[in-house]
Image (cartoon, rainbow, N blue to C red; front, side, top):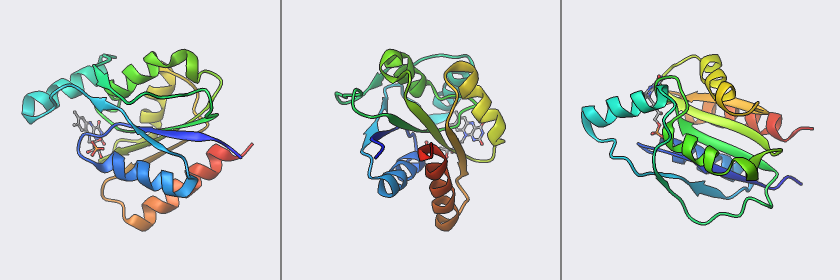
Length: 158
Ligand SMILES: Cc1cc2nc3c(=O)[nH]c(=O)nc-3n(C[C@H](O)[C@H](O)[C@H](O)COP(=O)(O)O)c2cc1C
């Protein structure tokens, strides 16, 4: 049976809910990567978009983590400027050696950016994804669950 971990970043809580939903469906533990940059207000928002689209890795805080055991990693993060959000970028760079050769899947939350663009921005910068899904905030619980289940099926199949 696959052993995995769910690594997430959130600014306003949507990705935490998605990470918890994926955890319920897989039994994998969740691991939060905290963004240490103040993202409040218009300036915080503009800085977030700028950092995302310019490939910036911003400071993070996380609990101690043993990545030797899991063979599968589910990343969950919000789309910022159709790009990888900076705290996850930092986390991926920090753990590059430990996560190479693992199966990686990505769940993103957004307001409507086309999924292909979001997936391409990740794969261009990091690794090929075994599974991907983009979930819009307006989607219902049923739609979310359905997407997460399809995602997990794709991620865990051989
Ligand atoms: C700086 C910034 C840039 C964003 N850019 C996009 C975008 O390009 N496309 C999109 O669909 N949503 C965009 N969003 C919306 C978030 O992806 C969306 O609100 C997401 O669900 C937030 O997840 P969270 O609650 O886990 O932080 C952006 C949000 C922020 C703060």
